[in-house]
Every structure is written in structure tokens, then in C-alpha cells.
Length: 264
Length: 258
Ligand SMILES: Nc1ncnc2c1ncn2[C@@H]1O[C@H](COP(=O)(O)OP(=O)(O)OP(=O)(O)O)[C@@H](O)[C@H]1O
Ligand SMILES: [Mg+2]
Image 1 (cartoon, rainbow over the protein chains, first blue to last red):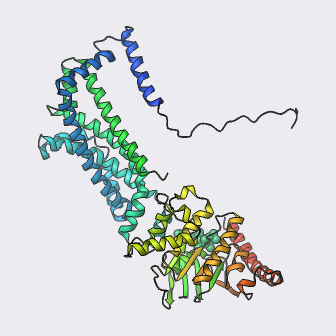
Image 2 (cartoon, rainbow over the protein chains, first blue to last red; image 1 turned 90 degrees about the horizontal axis):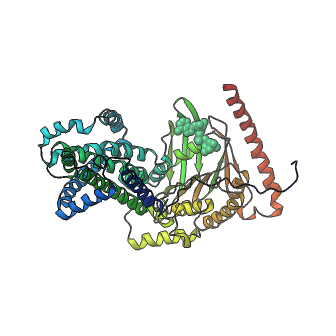
Image 3 (cartoon, protein in one colour; image 1 turned 135 degrees about the vertical axis):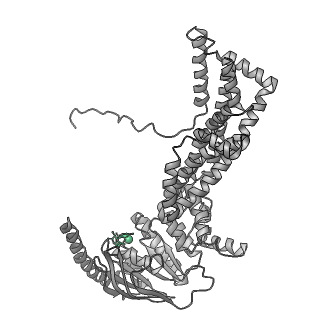
């Protein structure tokens, strides 16, 4: 090369690696709260429209003390867990069937594509007619919202299991059930689990929507009531609890991923 | 156990890949299968093991499988086909799990297969932690654990580097001498075919027919001796000339089509 001298080769390979950080996630949340607080305290926002984090925390404390929080949280969590479990169980069963059986795919995929975009909350009145105004219609709404993305994730998961592994199973004379259970299901698991992240959020969104339409208890009902009374501090306290609920769900799934996908 | 092929032919849609294959794989021999790329070697192997239904002809076995054989026709795959979520021991055990076996026998079979391939200390490792050579050892251990009557190997070493390939070839031979399992080995490597094979079958370009079956007339144990090198080189040159004409013709065919 012209121009003689030595020059170190600059490093340019960094970035893009997934690294777990313990500090950054809480720091990001803390940063958000800080910006919020400064904005309100500095007079940028009207405390009536956007109460400061301090008054939201106070409202939260008050709710926890009075026991109202526990009641609403328990009602919502109960619905989320039941609805999510039902939607997930049905979604996995249908998704596996579609992924594995060609006939099921031919029938199922168009149906899923046609029904998935229907806003589940728009058919809540129908669910109320079918299942009654009580718990079942709310649970059904959540289950329906969870069902379709689960089907799509399960089909995608099955599709990306390498054909060569299935052939390997066949070559050892494994029965179909064993191939499904020992090769297809574990192979589809990573995609199914990342689908769970989405369905958990959907379940939380839908429980609030369903509770806003017809419920006395539950975080959705509570938030709606607080809004009607212009208790924005309570409203945001409810929102914070909802967000924590979503975070807890995501945390559970991360835990499951670490447990089940150790091999990656 | 012997494997008999009579008039086997195959077409994918309207693309004929194999035509009129008559072949007997003899008991206890290693038959190497060579041929230009696309000549239908993998297809033929898949037909031999019942993974693919041929468009014509028939495949049969003759003779009893060895004692304790759970899967007479057993494959070793080029891409290893290991389950990434199972450990080495789990991958080997997979081949046994759908058979009713006493727990003790299952454990001893897996242990023996791992030991035979020198995998004892890797039993708990996951495939991603292993080198290519080690992964194929797992693939071979998984095949041995069912005590196969016929081993069907589709370019089992071609994903490996040359040194690993030589090492594994020798190890495979040592193991093979113990059981003398009938084997069909697809390879691109003439040296490998002449090191391992009792006979070498040459397929023509697509649609694959049997061009020739060459008997390697040097005893296997003498093949590394210098005084035998001449005869082996002769055979190698002969096979190479067969392959070259076929490969050249195949190349041109593809070029003409475009
Ligand atoms: N599933 C399939 N569908 C359609 N065509 C196929 C299929 N599998 C293989 N072929 C075609 O059949 C021909 C023979 O394929 P095969 O894999 O048996 O050849 P091969 O001799 O093993 O080649 P290679 O040396 O590259 O492994 C090729 O032209 C290939 O493109
Ligand atoms: Mg091939």
C-alpha cells in the first residue's frame, strides 16, 4: 500500500448482539417517571389533566389501603388468566392441526384470516347474547382475542421446524404422535412463546375493554369510573396497575423462555 | 441382511431421476454409491430405506435382522438431523423412546453407543456446543443404538473438514469390523469410496442408471499399504474418467436448457 506507516485496523464489529442488562430496563422506566414529574412540577402540564406521579402514587396507596385495588385486580387477573388459558389452549390445538394436516390448513387458514381482523370488542354484545352478561362473555372476548394470534404463531412455529428433522423421525419408525410430540412441538416452541408475548398484552387490553362495557369490578370498570368522575389521579393509578400487569405477564414469559429454551 | 432392488425408477413430477436400477446390496458389505450431482443418489437411498415411494420397481430385504435390532434400515444424515433442544444423550435416546424397552437396557444401549463413538463425556452437551465432527458422531451413535441391519449413509462426512473426515472414516471402519453391518454409503469422494467400499456403484447423469459396479479387489486391511497404492490409483482413475464424462455431459445439458 502507498503511504507507508502502520495503522491499527479499527474495530467495527460491535453492536447487534443481544446482551442482558439488569440496569437499563428499570432505568428507562425511572427516566420516564422523572420526565413526567418534571413536566408537571415545572408547570408544563395542568395537574388536573396530567396529575404528577406523586399524586398518582398517593391515589394508588389509598386504593391499596381501602382494599379496592385488591378487589379490582383480582377480578381482572381472574378474567385474564381464564380467558388467556382457554384461548391459548384452543389456539395451540387448532394451530398444530393446521400446521400438520394439509386438509386442516386448507380449511383453517382462510377462516383464520377472515375472522382474525374482526375487533373482538365489537362482537362483545353478541357474546353477551350468547353467554349472558356475567363472566363468560368477558372471558370469551379475551379467549377469542388470544385465539387467533396463537393459531398464527403455532402454524408459523410448525412451518419452521426443518423437514429434515421430521424425515429423521420417520426414518427411525417413530409413530406420528411421537413425531408431533417430540419433534414438531418442541421445534415450534420458540415461535409459540414469542406469540405469547403478544397474546398476553392482547388479553390485558381486552379485559379492560370488556370491563368498560359491563362490569362493576375490575380495573377497566374502575378506570372508566375514575374518568367519569374526573379523578385523573385514580385513572392513572389504574393505568399503572394495568401496565404492571402486562409487565408481570411478559416477565413470566421471559422466565418460561429461559427455562424451556435453554438449548438456544 | 440383504437389500434387493428390482427395476427401480423414480420421477419427481415429470422429471425422471432414476431408471431401471437393479441392484443387490449383499449381506455384510459396504456398497459405495457415486455419481454426478443430481444423478439421484439421495433419491435412491431414500427409496432403499422406505422414505420415498419409487414410481416403479420394488425394494425388498432378505434375511433376518440381527438380535435386538429395532430399526433394520437406519440412516445417517449429511446434515446430522440432530434435535437442537436435546442433549447428546437425549438425541441418541430418541431412537429408542417409542420402543418398549426395560429402562436398564435403554440406558445401557445409549451408554454403549455413546462410548463407541467416544462421546461419553459429552452426554449432557447440546448440539450447538459441538463441532461438526462431534455432531456427526452423535448422528452415528443414534444409528448404532437401534442395532441396524443396514446402514444408509448419505454423504455423512461431506459437511466436515478433511482431517475430521479421515479420522471419522478410520473410526467408522474400526466399529464396522466388529458388527459388519451391511451399509450403503453415498459419497462424492473417490478416496473415501475406495477406502471403505467392497464395491462401488456408479450412477450415470440424470436420469440415473447404473453405469458400472466396480469391485474393489484389494482387501480392506491392505488398502493403506504402499504396494497397493498403484492398483487403487488405477481404480480411482477409472472411476474418475467415468464420472468426468457423465459430469461434463450433465453440465452441458443444464447449460443448453437455458
Ligand atoms: N423433492 C424433490 N422434488 C423435485 N425434484 C427433486 C426433489 N429432490 C430431488 N430432486 C431433483 O432430482 C434430481 C436428483 O436429486 P438427488 O438429490 O437424488 O441427487 P443426488 O445425486 O443426491 O445429488 P447430490 O450429489 O447433489 O446430492 C435432482 O435434479 C434434483 O433437483
Ligand atoms: Mg444427494
